[in-house]
Length: 80
Figure 1 (cartoon, helix red, strand yellow):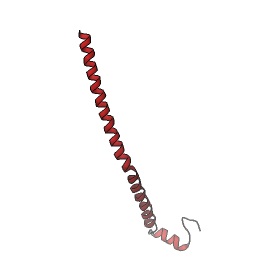
Figure 2 (cartoon, helix red, strand yellow):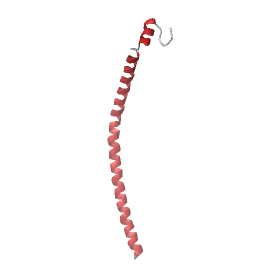
Figure 3 (tube, helix red, strand yellow):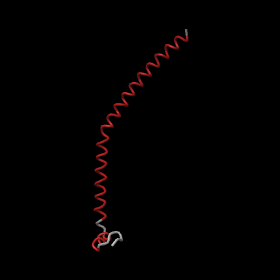
């Protein structure tokens, strides 16, 4: 009698766990879908930010007196 009750309770527990697992899988899939839709936008924004950052860095480095002097003399980085 006790084994039958134990077996029945285990079936109910396993059924609940499988339903909860299914719900968690559905939630995880929806979260992944939301993030996968945003990934191209995030990568595009990162690409634009880095590109503009490199351009600004080049502009600011050309404003240093020693670099300007070298450019006007015709030598860049010690190369005549």
